[in-house]
Image (cartoon, rainbow, N blue to C red):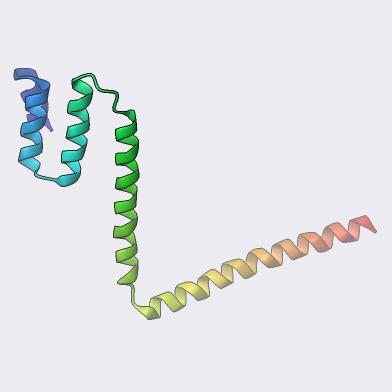
Amino acid sequence: MDVLTADMRSSSYEAALIRFEARLNSPMLSDVVRGLIGVLRGDDSAVYFQMLSHDFKALELQRLKGQARKIPPKIRVFSFIMLMCFLFTYLVIIALEIMNSFSSMF
């Protein structure tokens, strides 16, 4: 990052961003740099960055789903049992509160 800021101080912002993109060679960074260059040229890139944010979120969700698929089935069973215990606890508390409110009504 220090290289980028030094490069921006010594040359044009656009050229510095292009060199930064070339150094890291990341497709996602390329999209961001493309948007930043558009902003430097005076384009209204609000919609572009909103779409880019949406795409990045979708990619992250796909990555997380891929990781979740790798979880062994045995762990999934225990996770489901834990979820049911939490739900049961909440339902018992709600039922007790309803019973207490009924007793105060009559």
